[in-house]
Amino acid sequence: MSGMIGIVADDITGANDIGIMYAKAGLRTDVYPLEAWDPDAVAKDRPDVLVIDTNSRLDRPEEAYAKAAKATRALREAGCVRFVNKTCSVFRGNVGPEFDAMLDTLGAAFAVVALGFPKNGRTTLGGVHYVHGKLLEESEFRRDPVHPMTESNLVAILQKQTERKVALLTIETVERGPEALRAEIERMRTRCAYLILDVRDQASLRIIAEAAKEEPILCGSSALSEESALLIAAERAAAAGGGQGGAAGEGRPSGQGASPLAAGAGAEQGAPGGGVLCAAGSLMPQTAAQLAYAKRSGVAALELDSLVLLRPEEKDAHLEALIGLACAELRAGRDVVVHASNEPEKVAATKALARTLGSGNTDISRVVSGALSSVVAAVAERTGQRSLLIAGGETSAAVCGALGVRGLRLLREIEPGLPSCLALGGTPYRLVLKSGSFGSDTFFVKAIEHLKRLGDDIE
Image 1 (cartoon, one colour):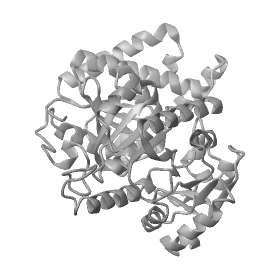
Image 2 (spheres, helix red, strand yellow; image 1 turned 135 degrees about the vertical axis):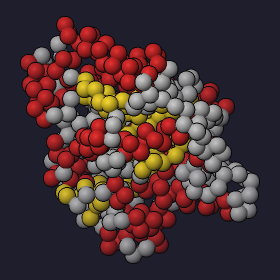
Image 3 (cartoon, helix red, strand yellow; image 1 turned 60 degrees about the vertical axis):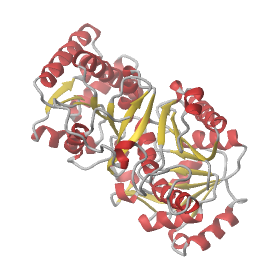
Image 4 (cartoon, one colour; image 1 turned 90 degrees about the horizontal axis):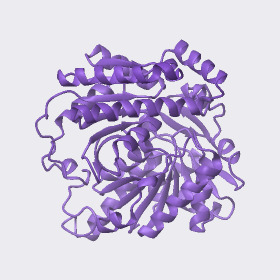
């Protein structure tokens, strides 16, 4: 189980989601966008876990394959010996092509796949995936504007995207324990390429992590990595003589993040003062509920009108007005969120107008993310704002690009799969990049308070 771990993730929020699973176990974890990958910089400061974000969820399958292959090669050349292909926890995106790219690049023929994330309401039973007790096809993801999920059987979903054989081990096998599960995995190794495992609860993940701890390639959501990271940390602590000195995680308390912040060194300094800048491009109901709670809690809300974005003669003035209003709120010491239109009628009207202009839902998503990122970058430049909360994977990637973020160091988990992080290689922005479908209704408020407690002297 020793050696550096390399992870390929298809969006930035997913990269952070899986990265924090290792960071909070005491393993230093860094995240890099594929387009900003710098092997020399990584070689000078080797973390325990390297994550590359391909930002490929909205790409065409062949583009996603190429990116995942490039990222896998980069991780292998950096010295990684174990690999994870992190996907959306409901299989949105180019799952098959990206899994295939990792296996092809590594010359491998088999991977264990676990998609369940019980702490965020995702479970798999009999190969059927559930979201907070609902069939995937009956959940909010059925209405996803880019990847509508109309099927709940994970074997069927993945098999449609790959020519490799996909098989399943059910919860009955998993709950027989690690040794029995390991034997079944070994038996299935020559019978399929992708072996999906049922996940009922956190206990299922602990069993899977133990059974698959020597597997060179794991695929799926971040949840399995939480248990795998604890096994790795315990193993390294034992090898170092009970955690006194040694390899990765040296001098870090078990269960704490690898950064000075998460390890407790100046963990939460006095609030630097002023408001926090937030942006939300996600249309998921979880983000809508978080926005509503934030508004009720006093966070100023400014709407980025999606219809105006499709009218070139009005767009620039609209964005400049938003920038001015956001700057005014922050200078007055207030928290502010700039969010995309999320009323169903406005969203439907935007899609209809886009169709008349020859654009699809993916195009709209990128237009909105690009506009939000330009607003955030302008506000940050004019106000010196360094604490940012961004909701939505595509929006988070666009904002990081606009701010010139070259990499991220994971700090502390706020809620399951939702960490804070520090920008590397430039302005040290303190960021929370949130998956649109993750988090409690109170998350925006929690994250804002968390960002205010982070010290300015984080290294």
